[in-house]
Length: 285
Image (cartoon, rainbow, N blue to C red; front, top):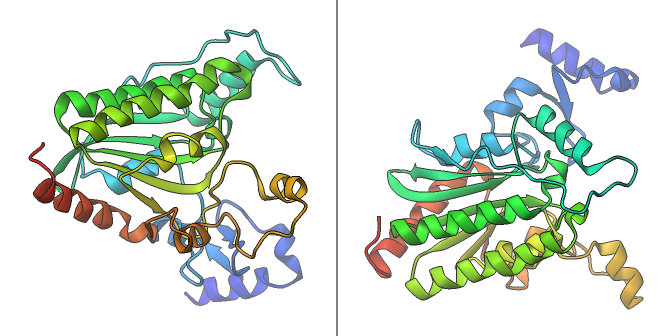
């Protein structure tokens, strides 16, 4: 610990620009230099100020699902290039690079799991895969997760992290907003619980569809949540936006988020909600 204290003191001085990223990370919330291993043990939450770092979809699965209970579905589904889209780079090349970087076929992981012993369907978005954007396969996998919940009489939990619709797929991406919303409407009619978890960021077409349709909408502290960005909104309405606009805390205060939950308490909060819904709504699972 003495070595760590000396290194930390040195790294908070002028030598900060040489920070070894494989060992230390700087917290954007408080500026503290954090030992990466300690940060990971704390589930990506700064132990000094509570700021939530972004974590991977796989880490969320490990966090929420009971050990060895997650069974992935549709793991090999991958997007095509229906519009032969190209800007600075061909869409096909972007997909290939994202697959190589993340080791996954798409920007969402879906499957069945148990959460504190309670069976559920789980879908977790991966922001590192083309910004967690919702293309045709992401929408299809979310819709299939909802249909799996319907078939199995199970609750659905979706963890969102997205920049919105995937522009490289045009209308094929935008139509996923209606498709996913329709499946969730069927779940609502059946009385099956849907819990939406909003992480940083949750924006665009994802916010305008399934992310905000939860029977309960939870959010992580400090998460950016909204449709258009604050700069675009401010320039459009020609007004100064209120402090904290589009933060999880602002949305909770204004009734669009039911509860802001620390990541370290997320699994227990979801399990508690599932137990209440199972007892109060109808038998399932």
